[in-house]
Image (cartoon, rainbow, N blue to C red; front, side, top):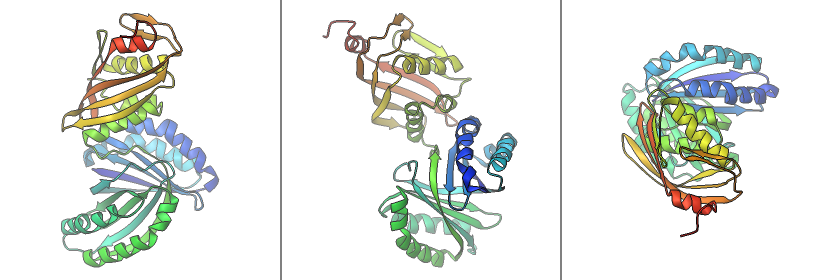
Length: 342
């Protein structure tokens, strides 16, 4: 995995406007790029600084996207009336105990490496620092980023909230001292931020399915569409629905969000391998809109639906290429009061 870090400094009063622009305009555009694994946005309101980090499958994908993000980078910088610096890193270590949520505390440590063998230093961090970090109360995730050319690196840790970030300072400092002594690294700075949002996934199929569900529940239509390969997507659902391409994704979205505007997906279990996975889930929602399907339309009944379903995914290059939906049609009709129970 690779990451492009945009470090911006500007007017603290304009960070909110920049965040809205990033969410509404930049994020869908970047996440639609080939090989993208998501974005993270961090801010320090007091200092007027922020970090926009975009993650990529390969260095080639990151490089190919550079021209596509230049305009939005310029506009972000102008919005906060500030300056920007851009850094590129490899991410050899990325561990996550839980996905950090909005408001999470984030600590960013900049280091210079003096080790003759960078790979040995990476292994030392993975084998020594990571187990200790994973035992710290309130820690969500930890990443090691390196630039082999400059021998510089970042360690980024995300915590459940600002209180957890504060509580872990002393223990983190002791661990930092121990690891730098062992790896012959020198700490250049320690920075702290608040997480505004993250869509970053580790890249395994389980995290791709989890992210797809998060986008659905968040009503992020453009982000949800961008999680699929809209040129190759093939979708099937009960009632004889078989569609391909963008039409397949848009039909799935509109069918359920129009009929059940307050709907929500829950995870019962996810079973995944390298090619794809199966999501055993629960769908809840109130039938206040027209439910359209291959067999016709069902007018709003005002009833609540609470039903289990299964979604089967296939992925290629981090994008959904196939989705098959399975649910009990008789149960759905019964809960909507359209057939006798049983």
